[in-house]
Amino acid sequence: MALPLETLKARASGDAHLARFGMDFDCALLVGDGETDWLVRIERGEVASVAKGPFIMPKTDLRLRAASDTWSKFLAPVPPPGYHDLLALRRYRRLQIEGDIRLMSAYLFYLKRLFALLRPPSA
Amino acid sequence: MNAMREPITGYYLNLAVLGRPHRLYIEEAGSGIPLLCLHTAGSDSRQYRGVMNDPEILRDFRVICFDMPWHGKSSPPEGWQTEEYRLTSAEYARMILEVCDALALERPVAMGCSIGGRIALVLAMQHAARFRAIVGLQSGASIDPYYELTWFHHPQVHGGEASAAYVSGLMSPTSPDADRWETLWHYMQSGPGIFKGDLYFYRGADGDIRDRLGAIDTTVCPLYLLTGEYDYSVSPEDTRQAAERIAGARFAVMPKLGHFPMSENPALFLTYLRPVLAEIRSRA
Image 1 (cartoon, one colour):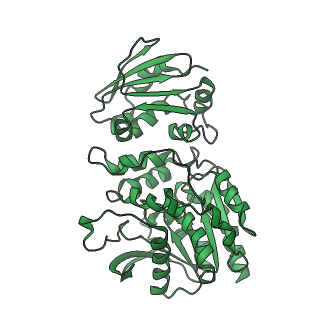
Image 2 (cartoon, helix red, strand yellow; image 1 turned 90 degrees about the horizontal axis):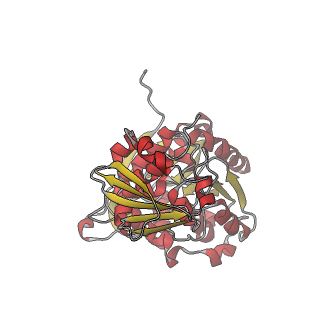
Image 3 (spheres, one colour; image 1 turned 135 degrees about the vertical axis):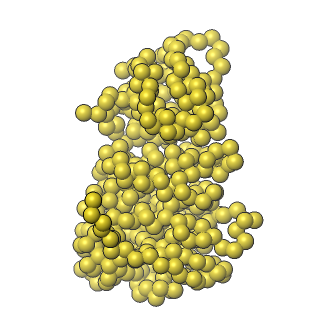
């Protein structure tokens, strides 16, 4: 299952968690699933745009990449242990995190929420 | 909503800890066998609010929680402003024994989570005769570092929010929202650098006790190890490996719980804890 990044902007719009933890957040975020890259532009805490790659030489602040099957398990409504959180993926070396780790740490609640929004709505 | 007073009493204790005057905040509830509860790194005694409100446990146990120095409502020692807080394994164990002595606790049960779960193993190894039983929650003998400590204490990052965000995923996605966010609030309230300082012994060589676990004698002090399945900091497999090196250790995985079982889902945790405490009581 591909990451439904094309729907991210709509899912993020008006989200109270992102508003709570996104104060002054600007970030060019590259997300990859091994086949496709997307570039998510976050401006002042809002998802301003999502573009689908490939990109030649993208200027990015953070890059998060995992295999497609890893993202599939992450996206389950109740993910299995070890696939339920970005740092859980990192702990088991399933997620590659590169870039400005200070920025990631400052806005980790925001980023975790952003990816959680890609899950299907809970029943 | 009607006002409801909880059965918890809080008070301050002035005592020497690690050779320096300290003012510690302590909570108690219930009566009977003393049960000393140890909170996780960068948090405080509020994590045990579920245990301290359980009528079944309070009937037979005097539950005692103390906020470690620098944590919760306990103050840091005088002169803290020019020090970097760094907890060592020896200091942590000594502090627990000093609190037990100051409260005149006679062979209490000790229960600790995360760093408290690690020190529970150290207590079992070095001070078994002082305790009636030891319960380790999310106990592991070492940790596989998968994150940097830098950003938990840095002027450009809010340490409380960063610490909370880093640990947030350690809880089960099935735990109630209200209890998960309560747990995170405690982290957000932590003093600057305290979560990082607690992890000093926990992540370093000082706290790595993998090769020393065989010294634990569970015939002197029974040892129970309970680990939530969603914890990836101390995974069930980590605890299982530790338990396999300790003859007589009792190990169980707690499904649908994570790294903060007593705080992220108190009601579910109590279903795992009550039988353990009942067994400890029946041995008394």
